[in-house]
Image (cartoon, rainbow, N blue to C red):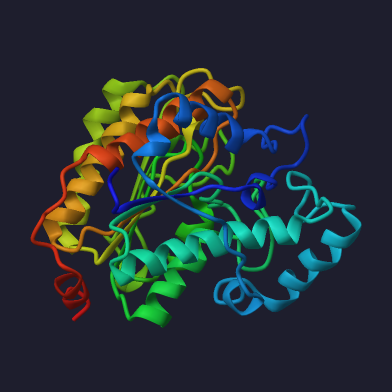
Length: 331
């Protein structure tokens, strides 16, 4: 077992889904975990139970009025939380708050030095905006995590890397003018896929110009294009030396997804996780949080996320990286 890699798993986050006939169904965690156990990965990581986020934590990123709306519709399970993609269901508030809470719990564990790397399969809800749901995403756990890192741990520079087929607009635009949020996103060109954003010339605004990297790829883009562009991601992170790295590793960029058009293999996901884990060690803190993101082909979910977890387990860690030295990186 690698005692420094954690995985949050449990029914509380598994329930985040919009019904058996919706692309984002409640089966997604189960298919991943069945495959993880088949591969023996469950024996190589520390298992953590889901944790609920307090409303005050949700409101570090989301507006109070929107959080209250989700709570109301969670009781009735009626209507939509956006313009028609994200339906309410009974218990949606509890499920979504466990997603956020589990991510925040992982952040706390990484910052305390209890773990070095973490994976939460049902997380990475990167479309939700402060005032509304969007694209199957109710609460933006990544946005909350960035605010928690800033406000509770004093971390200034955070890197967010996204290889989901969809552009991470719910992270990009709220932090578009923030020069300390280092953003790199490889995704399908918005001319062909929701949400229609993430163009190459979107590099940040004001003092943040140049801290954001959007790499839109054409439909059918495969591993060759992924590996051709990946060095640009590493170059950006090396330029800014982030104190914490988040990877959104949606598997809807893998060939065969029913609602997207990229053609990566699981090698892309394994590579992204391994290289970011290596980079975190190289920078000196070792902190990498991976979140599952999208993905609507069950085989791709299972294989892609397991490839990420295996990279987290197998990428070497610096043996001299003590808890005290990790804490020192915050200065």
